[in-house]
Length: 345
Image (tube, rainbow, N blue to C red; front, top):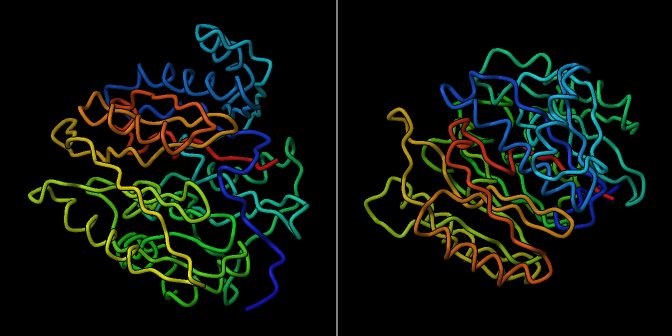
């Protein structure tokens, strides 16, 4: 394996800012969009108390409307920058480039190709985000390629511990359904992650959760919360459709051994299934976002909310846990982690 020129910092390392795209695509939340801008404003105002938030907006004249909404949450706007940058959707975790470090100093945009999860047709604006935000955040850009082809990858499909380990799922990267990179196998991905993210070992879980339209994003099922500690989504009810897959993931992690690293695994219970318009949505507590002094945690008006909040308080001793009700947000098939992308300090 090559000497690592690049490293992707872990989410809990110090951040300079969070990048969020203001919601405008009403098709992502049919009949529920009215509540979504308020929810984004709440999330942005919580983060902006502790660090800068860069908000991608469609046009300059939207600033007034967004600022007015943020004011309702006592957000003084001092930590808020507006970047005029057109988007198709608001899931910046997947469309905004991963910001990595070169020789552990200089920050670089690692601009994966984006094709809307190999599922939707309209993604031309999202695919151009990197070049459009470069006017405001001026980092060099690298475009990962393998065998002369650009690599399609979303930020929600990987999670790193900043120290050589990466979590992902076979369902997302190796399946023929919603196939991102036809022809790429496990070893190819391992080579790519080693070269561009400084990853020594990839941990392949099997499948994601029911209702996930990305087909297996890791940020719904397993997340590093420190170098050797993992939060893992777990379903206790054997009759639930998620039971088998999440139990398999647990067993895979338990067996994992690399350079004598044994993980401390914390099982995070799943909320009760949520159906909107008879469609099961991918509600999970794992789609949280770690910022500088806080963790934003999705909750769902569920009996398990309290249990999970307590687990998070116990495990994140130095951060304030801020629960955000995501019952409407999840109708867009994403939650807090999906709509944020960190810029490391």
